[in-house]
Length: 160
Length: 389
Image (spheres, one colour):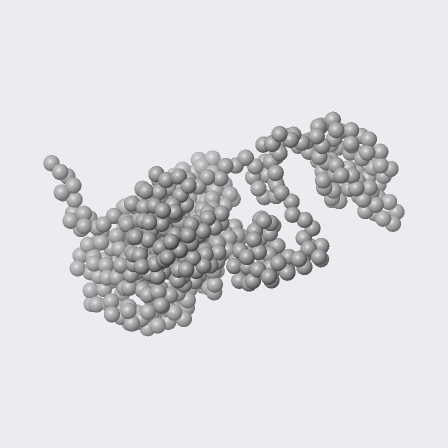
């Protein structure tokens, strides 16, 4: 049940408990209780909204930053990751395999603002060896959703 | 000179599908919601489309062998074995056709003609009757009942069979009712048919869209395998309607003859579609599961919605149709659907378009978005309240 609820919420977190109950053959109370439980356990951490900012007045810039760091004795990468993700500008931060260590997503109002954040906050952290900043020019797809795609039902009438 | 008069009487006498006029009406309307279209609302999964594109880029634009690419026939053989436990030899027992529709047509042409009878359980896909009439044979309807959950019952079948019966067309999961027949349901049917020389045309195009239990085929009974043509295809399971690709499976002596009709009438099925279909069978399974999962959620929402609107509705566990009972409204199928369309701008197809026994019912498809389904159900509920008050 938990898995099925998570699968549905993942693609639509606004769905009503009553409707989910119909889909899963249970009651709305059971659905609400299960979701509450998943929230309490920290399985469900939040409900965010996928926004195409390009279509709004608010022009944001996003940068994907590769960060190389020296792991610290006894704490590995966790300590430095913690220093990085505390900044509100940091939207995401992951430990990576391969050519660099931390993958950091930063959002700001302008490229300059993001670049300054990297230069003044991120790069000077003690164990940070290097950073490589890549600005997002255009988003095509995020969270499985394709941007700028007009979904129009133009199936023609067919007799069957 | 009026050339129409020269057209053969049995063609002229075949009525056009009753679905058409509603589609013409809805085309004129704004904000109308169609629950009328019997095809997936999903696009063909990308990896399948991509194989079609690659084949074009590589200049693979030639005919295939008449029966279809042998690679595709091997994949079909594997698929039929793995999914339905049916074994067919790709060399001699599988024919790739232009949709399931062509397979229905050529099988009927091979087995039925003037003076013959073809048993057709109804309500059913409109082409069964139409294609039968084109052969000059007489369709003999079997009226399936809501209280039987629109399953075919042996008694009814036996009553319909005469010494002129040459074929019977069974279509489960069913369009328009969404009914299915499981293995045990077929047992009694097999008892009726096993000693008779009647060809069974089993249209299993919706086989993958089975939401409870496993899809069963009458060909799974050893005593029926030789007497059954199993028809399936890519349209519904893989959301490939426009590609026009299906297939027929049966014993080699029969398939050889079907191939002859296919050869002269069609040559071969579209090859771009055949390349794409190989990918569908090799790697399409997860995408099929994803779509089936989504259909299933919508199915449950739709059945629940009709019941809450005050219409009796048996729970269909196949295809992507719901077939609610309208009789409590006191309206005929046509009255209900016409008024629903004019007053609430929702299109459902009157059940009698699929045979007389569909009267009192209407078909709604959930091959449309949940948003559409929710809004349509709200309008239907409002309409039923109004009619009943």
